[in-house]
Image (tube, rainbow, N blue to C red; front, side, top):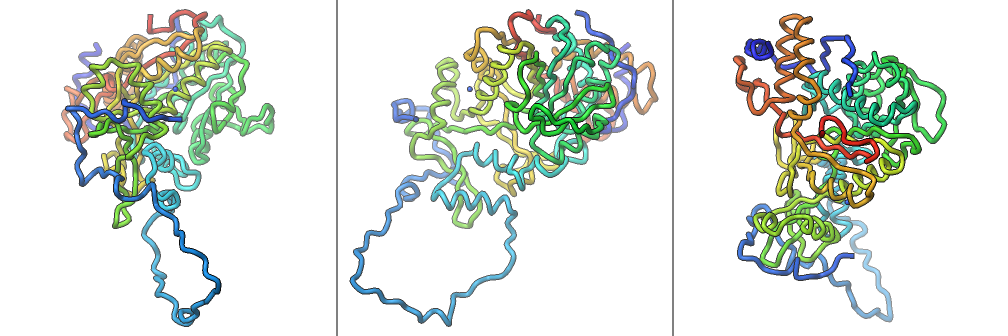
Length: 496
């Protein structure tokens, strides 16, 4: 039946946040640097970067600018001749944004370049001008579309996973349901709607959003139809109750501020890909970190550090987790220390409090090379162009997450990664789309089939007959799912 339904022609994209059924989902069944030969050895496979794109800092005197050592004079003379003739000063407004001025100020103050990770962090989360801070960047009218905005079925399937884990945990009466970077709150809203019939589950939950953007906090508050409460105990920044299921909802700027002591079910969907990465490039002297500096015309440019940097420690660690053959075939490597640190925090909490974490993101089951990208209004743009106006993201290194979690505690197990298509299919998305298609209009059916393909398909939809630029592109194999679970709960669905 599904095959027959998918063969119908589609006419348009799925509207962001559309919902076609208020019927709840079915209940579930069941992480000092040193000079070493590693960074100074030459390689026959070394590649010198294009001089138009990446430059070395050697011989530029950036890191060793001398101070004046003129002897002090016995008398002091003051030249006042210029007081009545001050140098010309332009009062024309600068075309640079506040964030661009801030980034240039950092580079000039240091007298040298900054890491790509520092650049990325400022661009995305600068408190005043960061990309995520003061606007809604999601959906068709934003800069990119995430899986929850594609179809309600995504949040519902994540809800099935959470309910199954809750069952395996022994149905605890109180659970912290934590989501990192919840966007508009669409995933959580769909999760709660889908689980609303399982009253024991929803009554046990306290939703905790880890969100630093005031603008997105307001959107999440609205999406979950929250009503505010005056209770701000336990250091909670804001406390509300979602009218969808009567579930309390709290907001926190960091995961560390989410109260501990209760079993935790954590969801990180498209969160790891926004964590700042360091890039290393193979050069004649070994691995050199790629940095961001100012060119003569005051635009941003990439350069290579002439000396080992602090992030080189993480590069060494990552290379130890890989085979020599895999590293030998790469000319660039991306590493994400923040991903290691976050994973360790998650694993420690799961080890002490019980529960599990679900990580879904686009990435690789291996070392990531050169994946950093910028997206503005659904189009790829130059990473250094008008920083703060485009989203920056990079592929997630899933083996790095596995090693970071397993190193922290022997009480947690890591499962996956598996493709998003396998994950959603095993949880029953095929049955769910069939059920929704039985009770919807033709227009809704077209959007459901389009959304379904985007979640589980690969490439362009074969049944699409509309404009090529509007063809649904499947994300089923580009995105991957991984779980970190306390060993006492057994193997989580669907990683059996």
